[in-house]
Length: 216
Length: 304
Image 1 (cartoon, chains in turn blue, orange):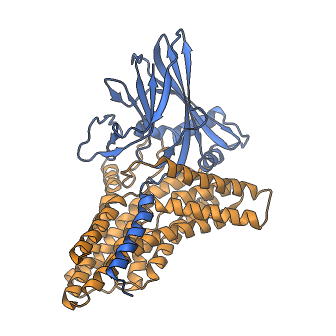
Image 2 (cartoon, rainbow over the protein chains, first blue to last red):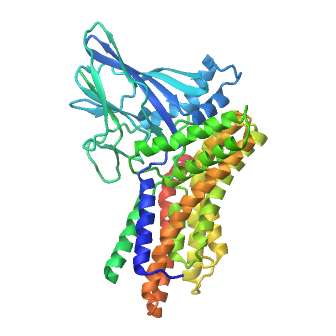
Image 3 (tube, helix red, strand yellow):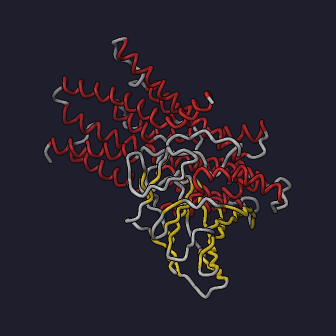
């Protein structure tokens, strides 16, 4: 079968358009929905309590695998098992977190108080990201982005709250996908490599995650 | 449009298409079999940002599938059956349209050889079928034979190794075919015959599809394996359709180019030969490039 040049060009255009729609997609296999409660203490943001809700299928896989006694609750030993085998590996990806202040950009790696729970077949991870010592009293941004593209992040149901202690400060927030603020990462980076790349260099990849901006 | 412009447009299409599709799947970053030991590196990961809208659409359909599967526990009927099939089919299209799923390989194969019009379709469905079939095989193996306690971590780790190994196998297999042609001086038959290309497609697709794996794990946890397999079948149809499109893109480009050159048989034969050789080289290079982090990680582990 032979096609005329015009016909083949038309077919190429149509196919390319169809395929290019898909090329925008980054092929995630699971999705999670973070909620964040920022702790404002004495005018500083001292940390954020993370609450990640997972999609039904990933949830069910973890619940089925780790809730040994099938009582729809995770006991301490089960949570420890989940932490070891279905959370801790995220340290290799800096827990998907990038924090940016006016002067600095880095991965906040001080993670504690991990817990897991389940509700109506949905899995939830809870943990604290500490900003103690950072003197975070000015505007900053936080992005949650999986550089492997295995998981997608989406926000729903008022994803950000603030708990103010000893202060009257009430920060505001907004989500933006800022094309001027790309996220550069090294897909071949070593586990202990915590470098935050501020500009593109050969070997680095670029992404534009949705960024949360917190304004004081 | 003049022939040089036509050629340029086609060339640009090929370059853009290939550069954008070098985006395979990776192992689940959440999971690890042994927290004390660093995981083996997965094959290369994605290089472009995600579209939130399309991701959400994909997961909307996946959540619909989950909902229909759950309803199978208490309900039955044709509408529920068709709804599950449709949701799985659309999810398969959206999921298969993302990077990976061997579209680059299928594309390369059909740029490098003559094909009948139905062959890209067959190749796409074969790739999707093998891709989903390996998921089914692994899940059943871990579930029924090994009785693995945590199916998701076992399957994820197996995927990681299979992915790396299949890329290495593909590189070796293609290198053998290429060597035959270069070293022994005869025009090899393998790529030109169905046996050759379908072997290549099967080898390259011998990795479990994480989307299919999630669906099966979910249906097993609900004790709904048969509806899960039915969902997997419909999902594979959707994926196969999209993978076939990559084959048809190459097919249309090659047919159009060769139609322009058919009056000059010598040139046609040379270009055909060059395209075939480039296909081999591309698949070898692509496979090694993709598997490189995995290979490096395995070497590190052996010598540690």
